[in-house]
Structures are given as structure tokens and as C-alpha cells.
Amino acid sequence: MADLVVNEKTLTSVAWRVSTAAVDAEVSATLTLGSAADVGSPSVAGVLDEATGQLVRRAGLAVEAIQAVGDFTTTFVREFQQVESRLAAGLPVGDLAGVGSK
Image (cartoon, rainbow, N blue to C red; front, side):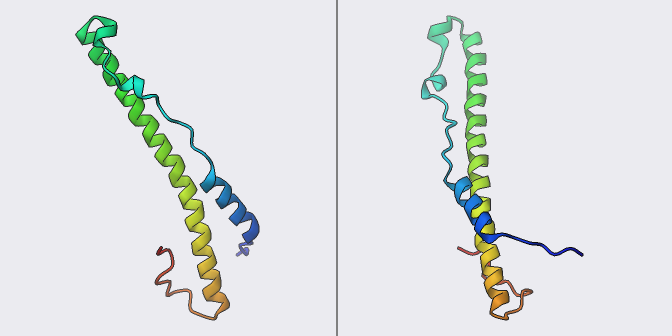
């Protein structure tokens, strides 16, 4: 089996860049306003408003997913460093109680 070689400096750098990246996927609040007055047809406005609401919800989910990716890399680096510390201290790796806790 091949050894896993991890460059901790590179891994930390990537985690920092991903977790601090700005997420600019905000949907304008004006899209969430009702459109009945603009369209002139309550049924058409209702369909437009529903579609717009879905767009806003999907944009919010996309932002959450991007943030989760950033959180994952940071968590991975922290847990990797904790496991490495345990190994360096001669502690068993099978008992990882506390690893991953904040």
C-alpha cells in the first residue's frame, strides 16, 4: 500500500484560502417583493413570485454549500493536525476521542 504524503503547509494554505473566500451570491431583496401590481394579473404574478422564491431559496442553499466546503477544509486540517500530534506523542490513533470537537 502506498504512503499518504501530506504537505501540511500547502493543506493549511488551501484551507485558509477556501474558508476566507468571499461568497458573493446574494439575491436582491427586490426580487422577493410581490409582483401583482407590476404584472396586472394575480395568477401570472403568483407564478412569477413562486419561481422567484425558488430562485432565492436556491441561491441561499448555494451560499450555504460554498460555506460548508470552506468549513470542511478547515475542520479537516484541524483534525489532521490533532491526529498527527497524537501520533507524535505516541498516543494510540484508535482512540480519537476529542478529535473534531471544537
